[in-house]
Amino acid sequence: QVQVVESGGGLVQAGESLRLTCVASGPTSTGTLSFKWHRQAPGKERELVALISDNGATKYEDSVKGRFTISRDDNARNTVYLQMNSLTPDDTAVYYCNVLHYNLWLSEFWGQGTQVTVSS
Image (tube, rainbow, N blue to C red; front, side, top):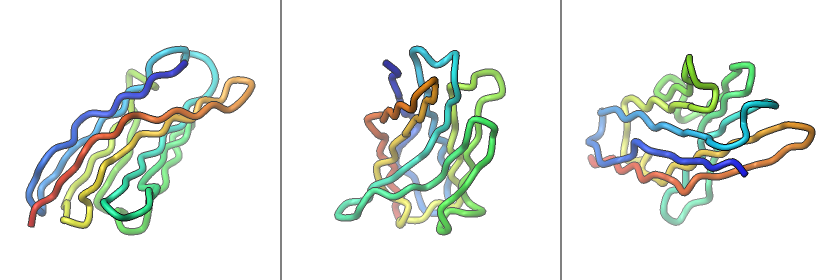
């Protein structure tokens, strides 16, 4: 069983930055690992913000393009970051890390989420 832990959330002012970290622990040394960051704001549905595939390909939701960067740790394939710059109050949400592990079959795991609050 893979465990997923997010960290790095907090309260910031508009225009500031935060870096979220997602660590997947457990049996991840074999197979492929892809990571997705989702967020859910109060009263809204959960939305995909960014993803990084096992080979390093990335994709972003339109509203965060140019402001957010998803990356993998150079020394730890099970650790992924979400660098968030130029934050706005619309970015306020709980951010969840979603890990997809493919090793003969696909398994999906979620973290508990980390709160990001941006004040105006």
